[in-house]
Length: 632
Ligand code: COA
Ligand code: AMP
Image 1 (cartoon, helix red, strand yellow):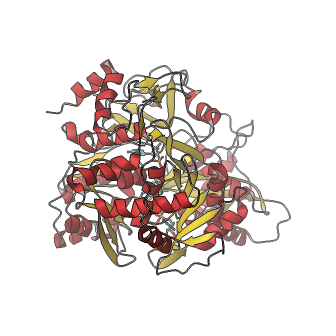
Image 2 (spheres, helix red, strand yellow):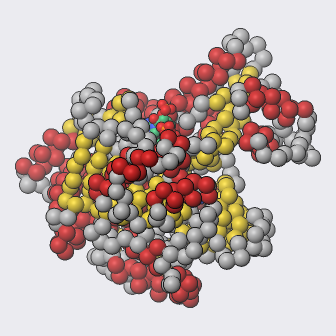
Image 3 (cartoon, protein in one colour):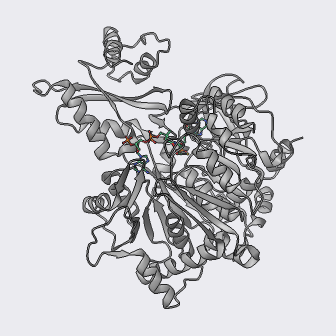
């Protein structure tokens, strides 16, 4: 029997008592006396009078309490052909030395540090070192181009950048330093210093006076006996900023605080994921995404578990058995990834033949999130692995599962296509445009009653205005998730898609608005529209339509190629923008709104009818023909 209903009811009855109890799992410097203050921030703040240090809770207290020699981080990189294990004591040693180095460069509480690093343990060490001294890290995913990095540098205004010389994609080394140099050149808030971790796969050109070698600095700090102690921060002080796609090209700086974040993640490790301290929890994501922040970097170590930093892919590094090998080798009890990874494995190895080469008997649960988990993929994963497959739904903004199936409280019956039920802390409702609840089974906007629980964003970085406008104004009293879906008669949620222009490509969140800005900047383009179209592997893929300016002499094919290259250059390879289609005109309403929704239905092969407000229905046939000419 699951105790979910009881636990959820206890939270509903007295949310503050619920979170006060959960907060006992954290080692505070000053424990919270006040649990919630509704007068602070755009919707209130958790644990407003407490002080703490996240790094202390991740490392020091476990070293003190007998976990010094337990492995904290397992690094497994099929692309760098390297494996390494670091104990809690070793990580603490590295972190306190690096934190001392940061202090030597003048980094203090509240200063921002950009982390531009691949999936190596040093990325985590850099993040913990910031947390140790109260600096605010902002990790930028390696698949973004220089311009995206520059935008984030301009918004965060970092004092210093932690970087590595390269990332490694299958068959290609991605040199980070030229991208970083270009980003700093483009930005108007130039960091004073760069500390660069040199990997043997790429040598970086160092700018004298600005760039410094990570390894020698840390060695020197250790030799000199320099170690930084944990700095006390307010529970409400930011731990990090993580930029995520908004509806325009300017990303949103999601802020995470220290106290609420620790309380929420610690609660989830046991109750949602069913993990015990000392066990191995594997989140096959990237430190550049929220899943990586919460469940590679922070959650497992806050809980005294072991995390895996896997620098590889589900397929091709070297084959579709990669995930099973890692599970077997490190006896992972849980695997957390995006459904796209399983679609990729299934496509490559439909009969799961590789599984017979490994034992995955340590695995108790597979967790999926990041995009809609299609029932077919869930059923396949369940059959081949023979363990429960738990879909759960959340966002960068919330930092942890809004809706899930709480393994630690006792699994509820699984319904394919549904991430199950709201977690304590979240009162999730489906409403219409007037914020009126809709009937069970009816689609509507998914909203969360305020206040959001601990761990969710208190605001956007230095932008309460955008926070209110983006999330709090449309449905008064509620947080707008910008997802649409429905609830069934058992209270199970079904998340069907976004209500804005965000698309989800291979579990990566991207803005079509941002891509349109790039397309529109091409000199031959008069107007454009980017939509996300169905993709068997990645869930969705972006597809751009362009109308060329009159008098353009280049061939449409040439412009299309240039546009594809331009998106890669401006946003980065992660945009996965490969389809550009030239058309004579775009379908619009009589008031001039581009009919992106109808274009998507045509591309996806869904039933569609021309909207009553359409200006010229014939254009929809032209769109269908243009898609057909590209084999879509
Ligand atoms: N640095 C540089 N480039 C990167 C990158 C990184 N960290 N991550 C991805 N890219 C590049 C890829 O190499 C690819 O480049 P290409 O166009 O030259 O092939 C491009 O960005 C698109 O990447 P992706 O959409 O991931 O496609 P893929 O074909 O490389 O891989 C999957 C497809 C399904 C195997 C892959 O997306 C995957 O493993 N997904 C797992 C889920 C996941 O990590 N989700 C994150 C949130 S939980
Ligand atoms: P991100 O902020 O990158 O985590 O992306 C968040 C968005 O991904 C959500 O708003 C959803 O649109 C989508 N998403 C995440 N998890 C799920 C899920 N389990 N089911 C359906 N959609 C999901």
